[in-house]
Image (cartoon, rainbow, N blue to C red; front, side):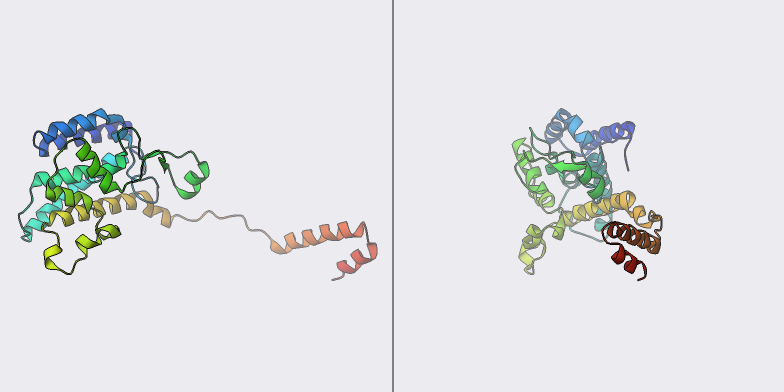
Amino acid sequence: MNLTPEQILENWNRFLSVIDQYVESPRKEQLLEFYQKYEERFSLMPASHKSGYHNSFPGGYIDHVLRVIDVSLELDKVWRKFNCKDNYTTEELIFSAINHDLGKFGDFDHEAVVEQTDEWRKTKLGEMYQFNTKLTYMSVPDRGLWLLAELGIKVSQNEYLTIKLHDGLYDQANEPYLKSYMPETRPRTSMIYILHQADLLAARVEWEHECLDNFYKEPVKKPLVNNFQSKQKSQEKAIRQIGNKNTAFADMLKNI
């Protein structure tokens, strides 16, 4: 899957409008200033580095974030319909969705991923991008929260935990928060689960569109080789070579 320049621009404008609609001042202005400063990087970033994952193409990041936002709003209705505690705001949910993968940005001087230069890894492994070794390693949630802190953008406790834990139990580091048998240590808000489920659904749908059909394509058929004829020709060639040195031995081999 690839996006046209028009689709990338449309997604970018919609992304900015979501910030304007759902985030209150002064955070609205802070986010808009940051995202617009790095407009080219954000609008062209992939959501992942490998085609076997999801949205590993230019514009894939913003496309993914918008899908997570849309799904979060729908799942919010579902959770509220079944009477989850009303202890989070729509702004908190959408702020978390907007910034859940912010760590994939990299830092202010270095992109997290750069274009793959190894043609073999690109064609054989589907690694369309490679990790930027100039960047100090951090997990995606940790880097995203660090960036928000560096920008002086305040984050509520709900938002902090929702961004930190958005990968759910796919990240072993989240087990103390999400795999607890003690009621007092379990998350106090369902918003954490809503964003995780939204991210999971969005990434799954993106993977389906990008990869699933490939499993049903007819394999490329290689021309059949007559193994007997091939073997016979090899034997004849070997006998000729031997015959040049030892005629009697070559004649014996012909009769086998």
